[in-house]
Image (cartoon, rainbow over all chains, first blue to last red; front, side, top):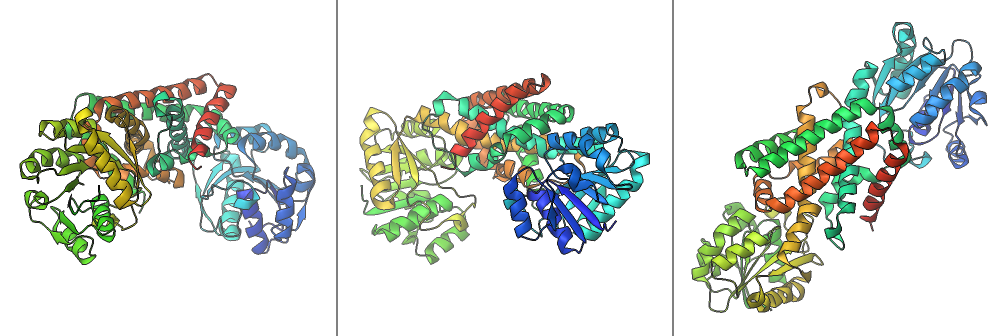
Length: 282
Length: 282
């Protein structure tokens, strides 16, 4: 769909970038809402939005498409809040990195036929509007999840919006598959970085020790916003537990090879890891 | 000491940089040796060394100071090999990231009074001569380890060389303390990066999954040279086992918090990790 009117709730890195790109792509009315007043001022000054609404309800009431670009917890709260205020035929989507709980909340809010989940992959580490950019989402991979058979039409509209208006690459995926993949590919590295930082922080023998770039890189994610990650880990709990168990097993394998002094086994283990990592650069 | 003659065995990133800097600092004779012929050609062309020797024995025979800048395994082999060929009064040091096994080998080679261990912290990820630079070691932290009371004079000479000739910052440290700290600060991040890469590589649900910058950063070290790391892990086995156990306990703590759905506990845990990580940027 190419909406005539778009509401974007949340004007941080993702919401700000999406509004900005839609405005530049010629969507006639782009209305933003953000709880942080500075983000709204920046978005207006950059002409990323045409107007700012002072409540979520006012933001959505004339929109053909509503994008919820808030943290996962806030999206869960926004869904029932905006549902009664949507225009007839309006479609709603989101950008959260977990999908099953969001789809469940959309169904509970009576939006099964009007909601599709979305998750754009945009590599930004900068939070809030200052992480936004008109080009951030261009060419990005965007996972789109249907609420089920009755939501398939909405999912197609949302995919079309991402491709035709934003210039991104939407890919349809089952929400459970999405959440499992994300548990391994995104939430596990976050958990591992935090667990390493926590382990090192607690070790008394390290007072005054020097740390190099290896420690800095491996723990970089540990500096991510705590509040958001508590939500993500809790809301994607089961797949994350499975991924954590996989990591613990992998560490235990390594320790056993070391216990045995198994040079050949260690070489195979580290070679497999190196081969996987080198493949990520391609 | 400001040696009149220096031998550098190994002309990779560290050895090449050290020879180069010593030559620029005015050491009258800097002789290099490297098993890789291209490294010797590059070092000569860059005028990082005055001459190249074709065997370790020939490299060391006139040197007042000998620096072993090879991987740990090769240093262990070189110590008994060069010992009979050293000039009277020559001092020997090394650059390996583990110190107890190297000091033991130096003592076994009859060099207790003439050897001091060294470990410069230079953040290079590029192996071999192409990682070398005349400025790489300037201002670097260098841990120096004495073989014991009879080696203290040699350790002072080696510290003085690093400070006066190379312009680095030598710090005297007990070898056991060094190895324990390195197990946590360097070998553990390496092991964790490899264990994460191995865990993800083995997970069947991830075929075709997309990975972002978080996974790339957290696993970056997994692409490090396998052969060298097999040696480091095996030679620093006990401290590394302790560090791995600490990491497993930290991951298990995180998983338990998740099992209980303990929002407050997760917030505390992730906050401690974030606080440690943010401290690394200072």
